[in-house]
Image (tube, rainbow over all chains, first blue to last red; front, side, top):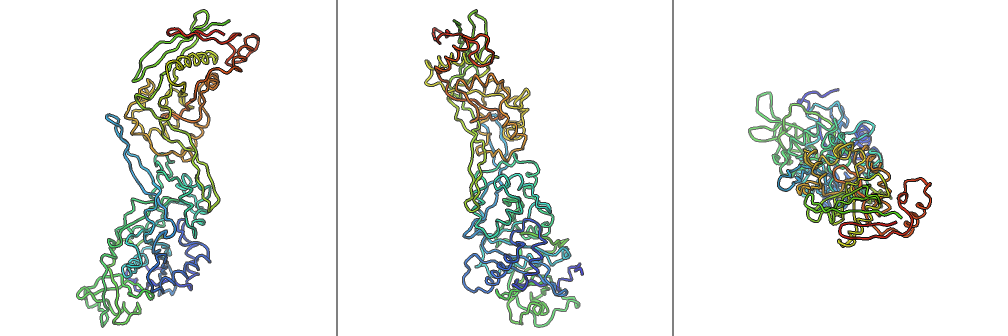
Length: 361
Length: 267
């Protein structure tokens, strides 16, 4: 099986994850690279997250801000789950979300003393409270298809449909450089000096804790990057190879990835204002056509991300929207389980030369 | 009885004045010298790194770590700087420091002093050290040889102040060769170190901002009575070998006579 072409996107659908998906999620967690802390390789922890996610989808009350939403990507032809992604409504709420902020300061000597540009990393909590895109994983066999676009962007459609549940500021962590044994050059040069733990060990510690310990153990004053070993310097802002595809999707959406890096592996943290993201900005409410689109007759239509607007029955697919009247194909509506009167939210699918799958946190 | 003379010559180098002290034995033969720059750094402020420890603890994990740091400071501004010690004999060095103390007692408000010791791996230049390569060169001007020359003359360019790092440097984040270099201590002769320590100047609190060399500092005390007794005992046993400070001194009491720019010490 290998859904090689974009035209195969009819077979994919994104829906909320349920506890019934535990086996799939456990499989994904084991297969994930180091740095994906929101997919812990612990069945109980995953079950807890799935339960919590279900409650978040079902909750019609005003959002408390501690909700998480997990989604899965189904290959309908294969009848199985092949990927997952998630949203944390508010990073660090009631807790702490630490990151390093990249800064360049100029040290200036008076008169003929010249100046030096000095790169520093500053421990901060700027992104505390931001909505976080999390837990992205897609099976390698689906790399190179529109499935990865759907899995990543469907979340943004959900956010666009329910803005009151999320922050206006949004971020996404991408795994940094680490090998299969968990050796991480930035961690070895910095974090280990203060934690005295291996990188995988501290990842396990970070799950389910307040993370206040991070701010207590790491230096509060800026780190001078030039003083770090070269290997660690080079790792700052670098992506783990599995994260390249999802990262490109974020870049296409309009995320900025130059300001913040992860405190453990120095992987880039992308951030943006929700309203400026392409999928959100260009999304609109639409209705389904009464009859199927006839593409073969040459009616112009454009591939879109299409989602059903209800919170607890969220579904998202890629489908065609007729250019002439902006109506969603009836076939697409049926795939979503939507009747003819249902409100749908759509956003143009951003074309890309390669739909590379992969992982981000 | 041994009579020693220490002559003082007033010089002026850089922005601040200095004293050149020369020790002559009873025959008038020059045995050693040093220079003192009283109240260094009061005209043109200077900087050092203070060696400290930062406690990082997480009660949630029951983890505590003491992390060694270097923090830019100007703590030694106003101290008297000792430099250019030319003496192979710890006793002569001690004698010069005592003579210096005499003048400082009379003419300055205190006898706090410091001396910058040679960095541990500086073969000929501060810029050869691992500390310079790993730390200093990232903040100081590219023309390191000119910098070293100016600093050697005691000329601290005011421009340097704004270039130096204001936040603590964590030693644990530096390359291992730098940490080893700093832990190995100064390359200065043991006799010099001994003379300095016996005169209240101890290293470990501060290092040089260029090559990470240690700075010995403290208050030069009057020699303790026990010290005088030791000198007396050594003098009464001329066959006793050793390199302690008392070996060159004679018996009797230590008397000091100050006249003009000459201190006479009779032992």
